[in-house]
View 1 (tube, rainbow, N blue to C red):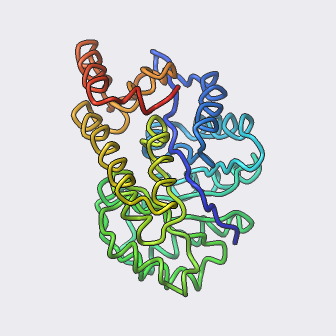
View 2: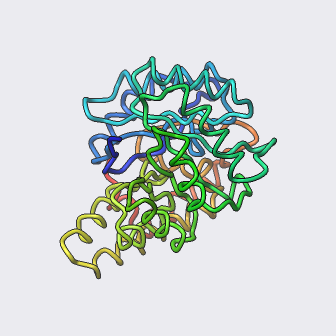
View 3: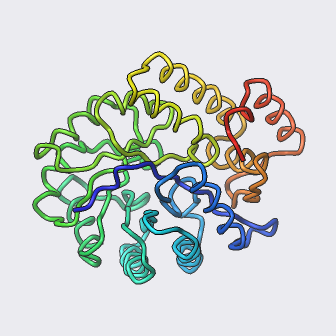
Length: 303
């Protein structure tokens, strides 16, 4: 199974003020992330508000990313849904549209009772597109699940031939490391908690998927370069810089509310979040911009 071996943005879904899709924004968006050195896009996940979009809208977003991506740019479609038939439909659409791979988060309402049920659930979706790499998306903060990802990989290895690995958005770096050792490193662990990227690199991660890569990847690119040349002090300084940015993001609504405003400051206006995600008030927006200027955000994050 081909590996990503690179860093993938988790793009926001551009919306108009009436909450309809703003598909025209995706072409310049794609050009920006490519210019910033990213290797792909994971569409309609958490940052992309996938569960707030219709199946038709998710297909349209994916089609635009595929259409406006250069050769070698890996577009991965998040196809997790509340109903498994929707996931299968989205997976087949991803294959037919030219996506490189698919990802699936654990269901958020009716849930598998145990690891065996989770593996069976994933195997049905992955089996619908056996020619595409399949990644499980582990994000306990949103799903509330505490399944062992080591056990998942061991059992899924026997039932999902196209299993590429896990998009791991969690702070348990011990488990992250243990997952990297399963089957002699057979599976790719996509580091997903941007504020601890340096820890992931130290454990051997070669790939990541991040929401703050949208606006801060110039920082992470410098961090990765510093780490690769053995300048660990500089890498740590850059990780601390990214955490400063993330602290501001958290104070202003988190990944979608705050992150979309950050994109606006970079002349890439992705519009509001779709309810129940709240958009920032004009006052909060200006306060956020002032805080970002104070910590040097715009010196690092080029347009």
